[in-house]
Length: 540
Image 1 (tube, rainbow, N blue to C red):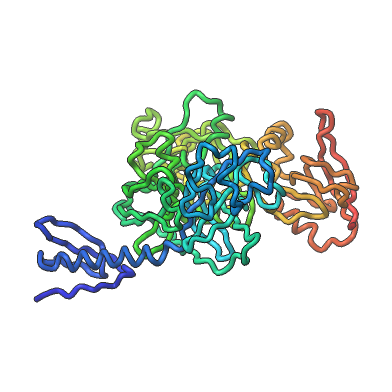
Image 2: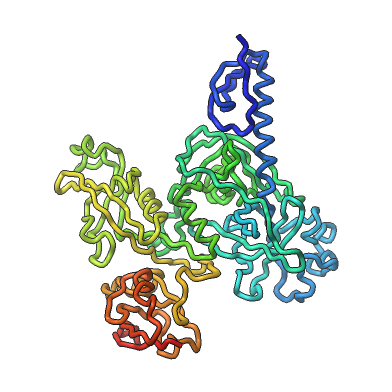
């Protein structure tokens, strides 16, 4: 009996279809059920796959954009720097490219640097890689002080200038805002749909849409397809660097967030869409991984799982991306090879773990929960096989997250479970954090953050540990109530109206509803010596 094959191009189910055209056996995922098709039906089955891929690409490619970054001399008059200036092609600084079209509106425009992005908001928000747009204009900061301008070409060939709404060097992600000056307001753009947060698997089919070698400058993304080769690849880190330099340069790329795919991801595919067979976004392609040490023929994408979606949402709101802090110094351990653990390998039941090197300081989240020598086995049920696993899971959980930690304690030869509330990881590379709005809404002219928000503040806390449970003053607006009360940048607020505050959320809860003058207990660093003082913040 001949099997009738469904041509449902949504690929809602997963099943295996065996094709034998030209005596070659191919296994396909398609059509909602498994069947072995005879050789005569091979072309029909192949046509079903073809229809499915064509349908997915047609559906999603309007949500993929081409991005170009143009370097313009800083002394160039502003009137000549616009993207639609007809004289741009005849400017002296472009003589070496006189034969090319230099107007970004022209489909023949060949940019200096290029990549792709995906539309995540119909009002013109574009998700892309930070390394692609680094150094460009930032939203809300006035004129561009650099020499780089961003242009985005949509699927319908419209071109917009763009600026960075928020960016995060650690995740290598950025969200751009299209500028609609001189054109109708940006609205109603086709938004890509994010995939489910269920685990991805090796062998899963994927489709990549991007802008290799800037050939998508006509607005039409290039497509390729393949499978996921691995779900947790990481870049090698530089050796012989100090701990501070390592923290400054460490990215999530080094911590195992990369998907390895066998699609063709050439130069310029950074920021492109990686889709599943439902046309949903599951990854953001990047060429930086291959250029940074991996085999260049391999393709890589940032895995967009649930923790990474938290990062993207922060960027979409224009806020700084915050990472979690556990407060331990971890190291890798191979259970079977460690002389002290060899007899316990059956009880530990996993080959690797992250070991706590030093006793946690009493002001850090892990204090009284973890001890030196403990093996961290699982976080929220997720296996921890190395230091990088621990750094990735804790970091992406974010501050104030409650994590369940499973630990094997060799000194007691038993496994224990504990819950820890995370702090905020101190930012070392402040230039790599771009935000157009504060994480916490300002209060009476003051912006604030966790006490450990910045590395220089964290170093101060290590000398005066009680400041860990306080609020860091990030900035004070001139002539605001807090400025008139002599509150200063990098002061630490420890109490509000006599009640201790340990984090920004507690601070907001204390000041909410206080309409009149508010008394604060503040620790200030003065000429290298800290002093604690009381100040009263007026209402206006």
